[in-house]
Length: 243
Image (cartoon, rainbow, N blue to C red; front, top):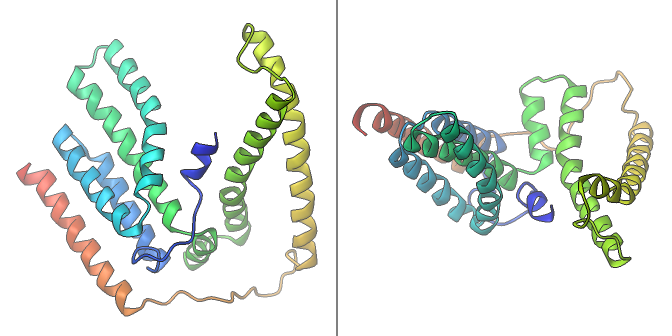
């Protein structure tokens, strides 16, 4: 569970990709997501993977991205088996599994290179309602935290003799009760702290809200935008008309 959380937790790093405007990073991830959906062969999947790993290398997140891919690999194998059982050809089943992995990779990469604060600025720039922005960004912040809390509680309970892997299915479900109760209490405590923080900052006030930072494209962002657009349309042309 800790590995799953680390695959989607932002870690501030000094890299050319991290320094880009968050709108550019979002556009890059959307482009990769679209290309992942358009995969129609194993060779095309290899090209998309090469692009993703090239970006990850510049962003210095290759190891964390590989960890996410290994986690997604289990679900990809399940997808392959289901499609093969229902009658799809092996190559098509492999293609669908690779498509799933590339989609997970492009999504995970965005969260690895974009902080929740930057994500909030992008959503406000898109004129998305404030309450929805707050709810979404809060979920992005706290879901990985809850996963790590659950991991710590499990380790703590195991050190006290709790055996989660033994017994039949009913006993295993019962064994998770000592995990769920502390996790729920911890979540409630976090929610109360968050509510008090919102109240102290007059979140419910109808006065216009301002931000400390404003999004503004710099020279490096414009250069990156040009490279992304050229690369995207080149890949679309290659995948559609040549490969």
